Image 1 (cartoon, rainbow, N blue to C red):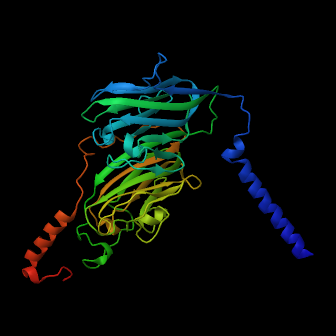
Image 2 (cartoon, rainbow, N blue to C red; image 1 turned 120 degrees about the vertical axis):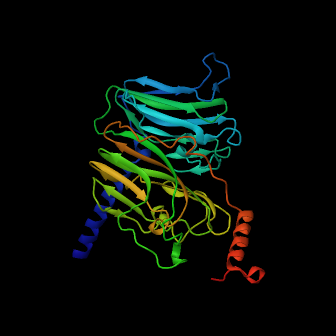
Length: 393
């Protein structure tokens, strides 16, 4: 009897939890009738009723405002597509900025490609819960991030590409409301890029050159975000270009919360943070995490795009958050790293300046030609010429 009673109590608890989860789901909420919101759209549709539904001829150096509204509301959905294609127009040099509550500074600043999950001015399919790059081949740029504002919202682009944007199509769907709930934060996003320096001990990943050093406090780590204020960190797009076949991802994430000297959140490897394992190089798209672009070169040479959105497990902070990651264990690797970090704060705050156009300039891929030159230089250095196979130490 006691066993039966215990089972029934456990069943009721589990049922209650499951029902609660269902009642808080987006599907459940679809049935709710709302009296406090009105749907609106800012878009590029042809105001004459014709079919020229786009902004046109955006010159190099020119800014265009996509949305500028006053009052309270929440952006629910953004869709964008651009012509010409990335082969002609560099999406790494079209800058997206978002301003909340009539602030003079943006709380979102990023090249438009990386913001929407398109690295290196490439185009490829990308699918996650908050961000997507959709057919045809990543030309449709989509956001479902919730972006609240209390007194106003402004979104603009700036063309820094060196060429003209022929056509810029967009829809920004939002709801107006009389007053924004006090507990809704402001959306932030920030782009960074760095060509990292290898540690003085050399590119000694996996101990290939000798004993490896240690890095308990994250000195020299790559910076993903450096945030002041109260809020929660919700995700990152991580773009790595490796000039070597060596595994790029032995570096650990280290997150410093509220000004601490030592990180309270420390990882076990780059791929582990992205919910994968054992040095992967395969495409995988989960709503919360995945690998949208991987290389097919020798080892881990080339470009890889990882992402993670912390929908159910954000990093919370009261005063500050500094999110860093090693570039190889003990920062031993030279890598081309770029990231877009996403988070919410209790108010719209200013960002550090993003890297300028010259600092964003893409590096060429390393291929068989370069590797063959390395081999020749190595043989000459060893002084034994053609007798060397390549695995000698």
